[in-house]
Image (tube, rainbow, N blue to C red; front, top):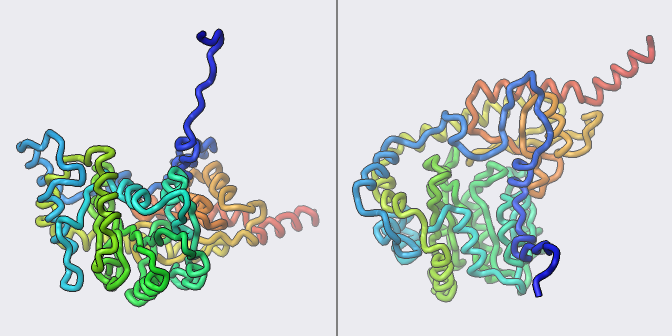
Length: 419
């Protein structure tokens, strides 16, 4: 018998356990900006927003030429062979050769991460995640019922991993260690020695590393290494894509590269192939353009991008170091800077979220509170903003901090009492 009244239909546990903290904050923010000031968004890591970071013409031409071909149908679920061959050649080094059989093409790097976590994780196992770290990692684990455990990064050591703390989180049920390098949100880039030390811990405990390397080679100074090229004994499942280095996050093409010198990941490879079949492959038009993109984009494009990002980082760091209530950390790569809030020097602000909300309402500047990355008392600022907007934002942030400084408020209160 049908019900006489409509009965609410419950969402699934999978949906209920799916939460992206960044999207929740950005999509549901109810704080109104100051209507007298232009709203400055320094919150989202999309380099295409302001028009000052654009993809190179060689990349656009590569896609345009593919429009004249027959890239209209399905491709193999784990990617076109010629695209996988091009990616393999691009990442191959003398120390770490890669073949097309090691490459799986995905719908963006976040999809690559989802597949990797699905391929090794389960409700009985845990995966170690960085803290602070990109919130999507926890979103994927929570959606799948995989336990998230967190290891600390040390801001006083350029956000290196606290290896002793990492060891304390490992046990016999650990499926993998997820490492981000260069880092979102920290803007850090590990030294070769630190990467080798991380690999030593993973080898000691016999666990693979899932390496989020979407910002690979986006290092301002010095060399850039991948875990796959450095590892001799630890299996590495590396995730990358076109989004950041080529400045096209909306094209949604990423990849997984399996580095497995001792054939420990045979079952996992099968699992990755099967998981790629869930959405029957990524965008075939962009896939088909990958060989030409990787072959024709000049080094000057990558160098110019890094020069602009480094300039923005230095500008932000120099300006914010002048604000007593803030302690910026100079980034070494990627597209972000983390800034510590000296909350004991702010009169009426107790949390990073409160700082962000009041900064929006008073100065119309939007930063991300780092509590969504697992780090209370910090904010994250993106570097892909035009220089004039960055300077304006810095001036507004400095004004805001001065107006809320404990010292200023105490002096003001004392002056009023003396009247």
